[in-house]
Amino acid sequence: DAKTTQPPSMDCAEGRAANLPCNHSTISGNEYVYWYRQIHSQGPQYIIHGLKNNETNEMASLIITEDRKSSTLILPHATLRDTAVYYCIVRGGDDMRFGAGTRLTVKP
Amino acid sequence: ETGVTQSPTHLIKTRGQQVTLRCSSQSGHNTVSWYQQALGQGPQFIFQYYREEENGRGNFPPRFSGLQFPNYSSELNVNALELDDSALYLCASSLLYRGTEAFFGQGTRLTVV
Image (cartoon, rainbow over all chains, first blue to last red; front, side, top):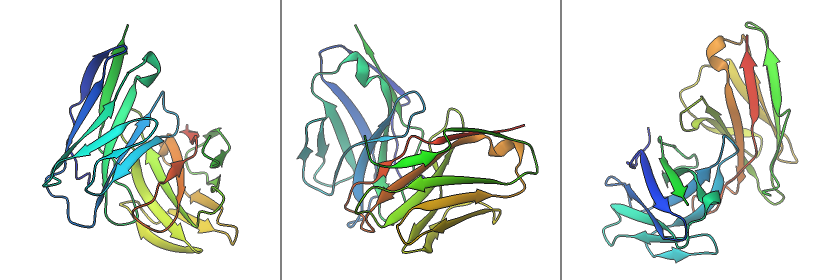
């Protein structure tokens, strides 16, 4: 079973930052937080992952709270092509357990 | 592009038949995981292979089986197909370490009629 809770849907205006929340209150010390997105039933696309420090790459930033019970994925300047289902996953063992994700719609 | 390739991209089978799906992992990766994604749902973990051995399994019956080859490519076999097996089947390759990225292929769309 997925160990994360995400809102089912969110909207964001094009050019604005998209902030996608994720709760993972039962996360343990050796578990990582991963984010993937999926567009039109293509294979999930890796975005970013982290353990306890905030992370940034060319796609997004990941902010993890100090107690590690929640995190936020930030897309700094959302475009229409960022419309997708975003999955937050806690990975402790070697498999990933997906939940239902957040459907992000970026609007013009 | 992730370097993970799956074949075929689409497949139609009849109930009761058997099917084999294939996955070539990304160069340098030694672990392949398989997922089933029904329409409108998130991917569900089937099993994982590491160094040609099954390394973990989700809640799927034994008629779902797999293989991993010395070059780390993998197959997913499903026997006695049922209508509910219709789904997108995804493979992901990675290193066997929880702190590394896993990259997915584009999937195989299986339809059972």
